[in-house]
Amino acid sequence: MQDFCFYLFSALTLLCGFLVVANPFSRNPVTSAMFLVLTIVSMAGLFVLLHAFFLAAVQVLVYAGAVMVLFLFVIMLLDLKEEQRRKANKFGWVTGIISVGAILTIFIRAILESRSPGGVTLPALEGATHPLGKMLFNDYLLPFEILSVLLLVAMVGVILLSKKDLK
Image (tube, rainbow, N blue to C red; front, side):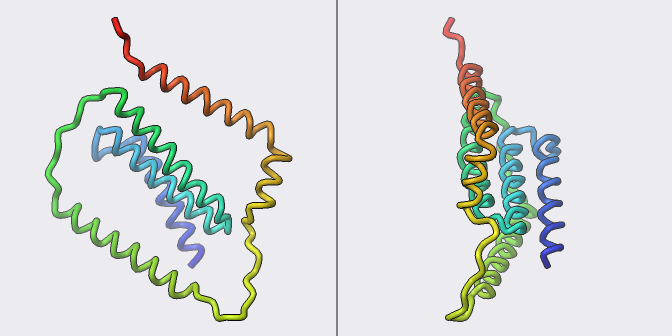
């Protein structure tokens, strides 16, 4: 089952990553941003398979949450032409309902199978946060700080590029 999940999440990551760049369905940049969210969630699934639960949660919370909100604000500030609204087709509704049903089935099944009997000690998690924090702030402090400065410069650049001339 773990091999199947790995191939599924890998294929989803590659497919959604391709659709971020070359989207045949729509020329709207918001659609590409949503495919980027799906790419990030698929990568979080790969982290879960590696037993790095903290990294998976951070991946979803930070990147799919905060960074995507920043991307969407930039898309809105660029004042791109609004795409004409299309009617929802039946195929989209049917596949959406099937997808939601499949995800709910997987969640319910995982919750029912994860209940452990009382009195059993659980093994230590491999992706624990304490060793990760020690490694990040001891061994990789300089790359961490360089990345934070790079993100700050990118945010300032986005703000300066999105300002309109007041001439």
